[in-house]
Length: 401
Figure 1 (cartoon, rainbow, N blue to C red):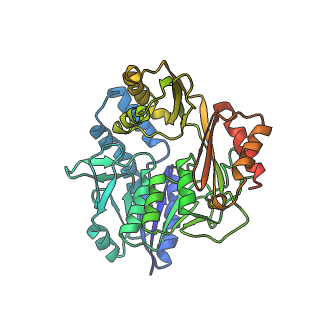
Figure 2 (cartoon, rainbow, N blue to C red):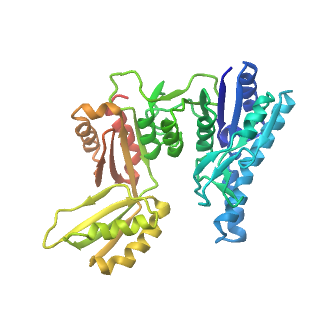
Figure 3 (cartoon, rainbow, N blue to C red):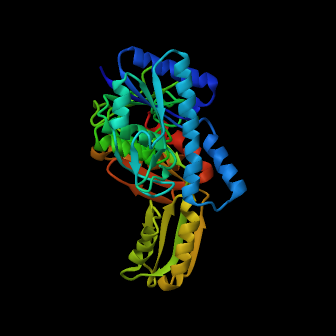
């Protein structure tokens, strides 16, 4: 008998028809002799609707109260799915995050899971119940409801799979698996049968919206076998694993992230300690910096540019403005009309010429590169926002993915 964790996203449980479809998938898995834990997201646009309701009442509501509100979306989904399974004559129990023993820190709105108390879930599985858990939420040491941030239901599912030593964690979405690029942008993109944790983590961090990057980090850390597959079509998906069979493909995928803003400090004194003052202050305020570019010093000054997410743009600009005089910068420039386009593949580390091929494709398409960032398995470039979709296509074609 296997233990299988199945997570269903908002589009998979969006309405009554979709919920009945999910109940059918879960029922088939259970009837095959497996123990089943199901993690659900809020239906469709429920979370966005709740955010709008909160804004109508209090645009500056506390994060604690926002967590209390937003957690109700997943609770609706879990109860409705339990009702659908009951209608099919299957034994089922639904549990909120705190009932399922999901213990988190006290960082409201972006909590991290500290541990999972397994007793309740193990007890329900022992009664041969299908256990449905509300994703995206837990409880902190003050017994307050917390949420895990956008995409947190993926993290909930992997955490449960890790804690209970599940044989498989399946992430059901509205796509068939992980593709070489977003098929909405690149019609000839194709599904990968398998991908490494590291490659998937890079793709998730670089804009691919199939999985939440924190869930991939956790899956790698605890060696959780994962499969990304469609809830709408019954066919195999993409398996995530530590090592995959070698193929001719050096590049596994192309991703683009439009949630980017570039901030530049112009004519900063070319002297030791400037970068520390800038990035140390940003780090102290929990602002994540991605690509960094520092120009060669001239006339005793240099320019420093870096990227942040658009959601942190204003906070970053406020900090930079505060320390502008201390850094003796002549000017500050912010541009959010940019996009980050990236290629990912473990094969590129030992194969020279990958970067040149990417840059050649962009050059032939007359797409200008503003900034470049590289690692062992990825290359990212910052380009104009209006050219991002075209860039993904030409890079995908250049590597014949």
